[in-house]
Length: 162
Image (tube, rainbow, N blue to C red):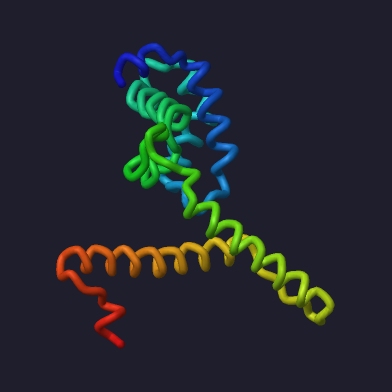
C-alpha cells in the first residue's frame, strides 16, 4: 500500500478526492469525519502550496483515493466484501430462474389485475425481491433440512407429522 501511495501524484489524488467528495458530500452513510478531512484537503490552498507541512493529511487522502478507486469508499463494505467476484460461484442456477420467473409473473398479474382500481395496487421490485428471498429460504431450507434428517434418521419429518 505504501508503494501505491508513493506512486500516486498529489494532482491525481486531488482529482479523485474532489470526485469522491462531490459524490458523497450529502451522503448520510459516508463518515462525516472523512468528509471534513477531504474538505480540509481540497479547500485549504496551503496544503497544495506547502505539501511538506501536511504530509499526514496528504498520505491519508492518497490512501482514501486509492481505496475509493480500487475498493468501496465505505469502510463497512470494504470490511465485509471482496473487491473482486468469485468466478467459480454459480449465479444462474435453476433455483434463480424458477423463483425469478414465478415472482415476475405474479407481480405482473397483481399489477394488471388491480390496475383499474383507485388507488391502484402495485407490487414494486423491492417487495418482489424480499418476498422471493423469504419464500425461497423457507421452501428450500425446509426441504434441505427434511432431506438431511431423512439421511440421518431414515424417516421424513413430514411423514411423522401425519
